[in-house]
Image 1 (cartoon, one colour):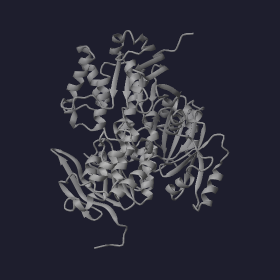
Image 2 (cartoon, rainbow over the protein chains, first blue to last red):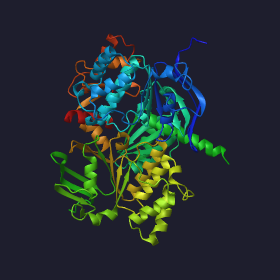
Image 3 (cartoon, rainbow over the protein chains, first blue to last red):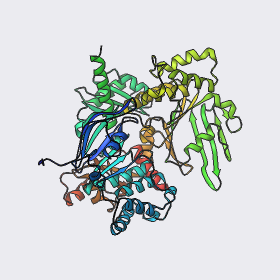
Image 4 (cartoon, each protein chain N blue to C red):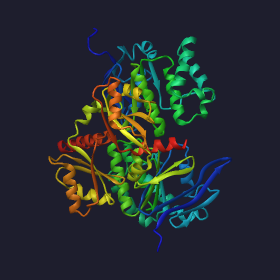
Amino acid sequence: MPTNTRPLAVSAQGLSKSFSDTAAVSGVDLEIGTGAVFGLLGPDGAGKSTLIRMLATVLPPDVGTALVFGKSITDQRDEITGRIGYMSQKFSMYPDLSVSENLEFFATVRGVSRADRKERSQRLLTSMGLAEFAERQAQFLSGGMKQKLMLATTLMHDPDLLLLDEPTTGVDPVSRREFWRILAGLHQEGRTVLVATPYMDEAERCTDIAFLDNGRITQSGTPTQIKAQVPGRLVEVISAEPRRAAAILAPLPGVVSAHLLGDVVRVLWTGDSDPEAALRAALQRGGLAEAEVAEAGIDMETVFAYLAEKSSAASELVSP
Amino acid sequence: MAEPEFAIKVTGLTKTFGDFTAVDGIDIAVPRGQIFGFLGPNGSGKTTTIRMLTGTLRPQGGQAEVLGTDVVHHADQVQQRIGYMSQKFALFEDMTVDENLRFYAGIYQVPAEEFAQRREYVLRMADLVGREDELTRNLSVGWRQRLALGAATIHEPELLFLDEPTSGVDPVARRQFWDLLYELAGRGVTLFVTTHYMDEAAHCNQLAFIYRGRIIAEGSPSQLRHSQLDQRIFDIAVTDADAALDQLSGTSGIDDAYLSGASLHVVTPREESLTADDLRRRLIAAGFAAPTVREVDPTIEDVFVNLVTRHR
């Protein structure tokens, strides 16, 4: 029955997949609203690719169901594939075809009309900064350009949902920034994007995120909701002797953690008083009066490290 | 005055392949006990440099002293004293933890009487005590990573090369791993980390940026963040950051605009007189409600992007 809520691009219940005796994805429930930029975060081997391949209808689940735009990924595959664009982690282009020939080829396979092929290919090449490389063979593109070409081929049939499996892994920061700018454009066009990434900083560019670990979703929500689970404030201390500074600060009441990050000590503070004054006083007592102390915004890496440590501490408490 | 003790001292190091210059006369000096980050995009010359420093590739020109020895002519004297760990963790998946350690001890010729003690140290460090007989493929990524570090240090090297060591691991494992690296550095081991991941770069004491075979900037992370950039960065919190990005991109006085986390970052030339107030007014004039604009410190990534763009 149609409802009045925001239509869902993806809705999955209890999705599971094992390979021989390894459970890659275990009982995943997932809802992705139309128009979301949904970040699927997690380390290597967490199950991100397996989950994406199931949603892309190329891998059937062992247990569970999922609907993409209301159609079943197992029983109505044909009604889904035309509306999704799936970009795998591997470079899946013809290396000896040119950029524009690759676009032409993949669009033809997808049944895109000649007029649409021409118009979209030109528009995509221009918007992705690939126009001047249109005649270059795909094998001679840089890593960042290859990623953009792959994204362009997944867009040629004008899909409503993009499933992107670690599109920015191994890509340098300049290209990574550019890639996210393109994703922002797709978001503005109203497309739904599911993007898997191992990078915590990319989480904040998403409208919603889920953290996958060992095949299970351990956290999900908007970046703001997830950040709000961390109590306290993050303070950065810059000192000529960061290791000593960390040792001085770690045992202080109010300090949840004090971690070294290069020449900076990052302190998570839950005390009632002003953290800057308290830390400065402690550093002075410890003989590090020169240290600089400044509050910093809490970043996603800190959030996930905190939540993961908390949940493992909790499981140690309850287990015998 | 005695020269400080360098683990690596390189002058004018050059390597060409045909008419392509991969490494173009670089100088590097890494004091002992330092965590040195060697940063650059793919294809900038990082791997070629490591291969010359480990004595597996001969340079065309320049000198390279590693642990006080000329590595170009006497690589064999250095190779037992250095370790190497890549992001691919060169472990045998179908061997147990113990067998992997034995294998690497053999490669590095660890004397039998020292092996037991080294093995125990590595197992404790990697938190693998009790898992000696487990197959490596059954370990989590974080564990495998610590085992790989153990294997690369089974012969107690004085200098360890790490190639993107924490890419693809979760934040907790990454933290634990860096704690181990800080401990190694605290004991005097020098760490040479090559990466293009900014979160790994931030963990190093000292950084050098390589681009197109040349070193284009160096310093500590804080120094680089505060002195290298000839631009200012504003952080803009606004309800529709995507639309604000379109609004401000390419307008006068703005070098670059990009989404950073949930907010928008705008980059202006340092000499440009645009203020946070000016940017706020521009957005309000374009119909954006209550934007918050403040100048922020650049990140290592900002510096990297700026340097690469400038040298293109």
